[in-house]
Length: 159
Image (cartoon, rainbow, N blue to C red):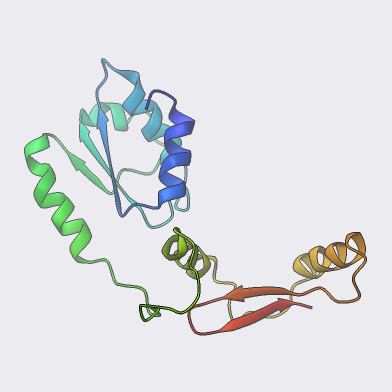
């Protein structure tokens, strides 16, 4: 993709395990994407960032985090990807298939995002209570609930 932000959005929407960025000083797109995507520990969630190519291009800003893996040639890529994928732990909770209800196409991504949020089993928070109150008021309903659905539980974050 030519647009750095569209690329970052597409990656964030799909939540891949590994992203390989070709970094070349002659072509600024890879270095620009690296600069955007390495903005902090949560920029790509648990996605591992691998940079292939010129190490000087990824080191252009000392304030940025280094890539998960810095490779100097594409020949190193298969082994690096294998190593990166081998230590990924599967999600703790999984749905037994087939299920008797419809599932969204991105259900596994939703569950992964919910797990990363760390909101399940947490105490009520004023921020979520304000959102629930706003929903109740705007929809003219006496009751409003905010729930988080795991494969096996429904957690009421706000009532």
